[in-house]
Length: 151
Image (cartoon, rainbow, N blue to C red; front, side, top):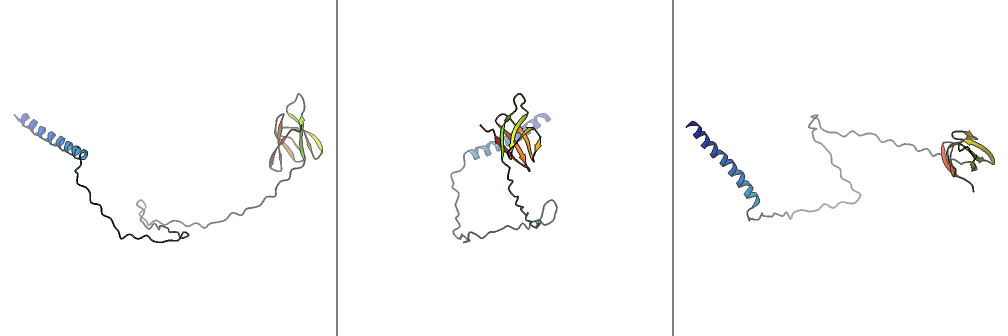
């Protein structure tokens, strides 16, 4: 007889819980037709500001982790001095061609003198970086330039 009483009590409790859940679902699916009252505040006035005026927010709140008041660190601004570099003027350079049978040797004319270059070689301050049959890339005083072959 003890087990039957417990079963009936549990049956009533489960029915009450599911009934409450069902009622909440039903009330959310079918809301009442009463309309919410809209309250409008007509005392609002806009503050006139000029375009150049800026407003900042001062965060004077306590940091929840450190327990201290937050203060932004102000770092002095330093301006970097810009140094104007003089433009590098390349000497008159012409790519004449390559030596047949050897694709690593290039004929380049610098200031009227013809020189035979290999990749990485330097003559008169001009270094050959790369090259193929149509163009070469040279470096002079830290600046690179592409020279196309003369036809």
